[in-house]
Length: 139
Image (cartoon, rainbow, N blue to C red; front, top):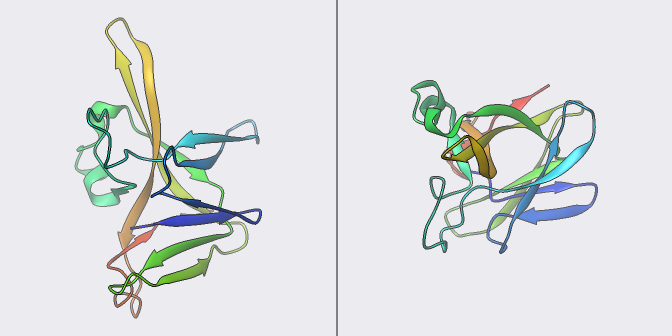
């Protein structure tokens, strides 16, 4: 899981209403994109939550959302332990958090909504005590 990221001194929390994440575009610009699907939404378009497990992506569970890999700009990310304490971890220099850009199209192929989900993998050895899932870091 990934509960928050920090980028250029600003913190972005999934729990915030209308949460967004900075996504690196192929042009080199950064665009803020809706972060996941809020649990409070009564009519969700995407699966509820902030993250997409890499193994579920490989199994095709996200295929109906036209998934595309993207890079999320982040200097740090935050995980909460079982006591809800925050633990911040640096993203290595030159690294990005891998995101999955999900899209929902209306009939006729018109884009209705997009959201980015943090792609997660099992936590590195020794960090399972904080959380069992970890953002996937890519270059």
